[in-house]
Length: 136
Image 1 (cartoon, rainbow, N blue to C red):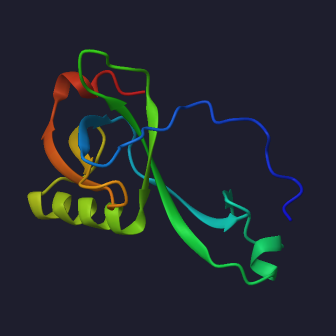
Image 2: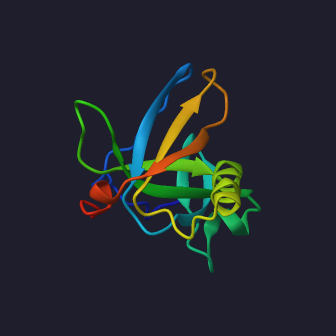
């Protein structure tokens, strides 16, 4: 259906938060990048907006957000992407506003899924000034 889909893989790996597990992450960007996407033929495609073939066929769209993060721990890796739903972002953003945070850069969060099909839940842990110096 979508002929001109990019064939290159993203340059950043995607963080996989599996059910029953969690991880601590430091956010390495100033904000969330939100995109409208379509699920077509078992794959997610970014909606280009005008003249979108999926929109013209009335395929539903959904918001997908991405944060650049670094996994904390003994095997700290290069920056990765964390994909999150609109509800996961709204929850984290609401918690940050209640705590008086004005931005997300340098914020340490704990991300987890309670079960395999459970939604991603992110909770702010702290802000680390020494980590903020290593932000990309």
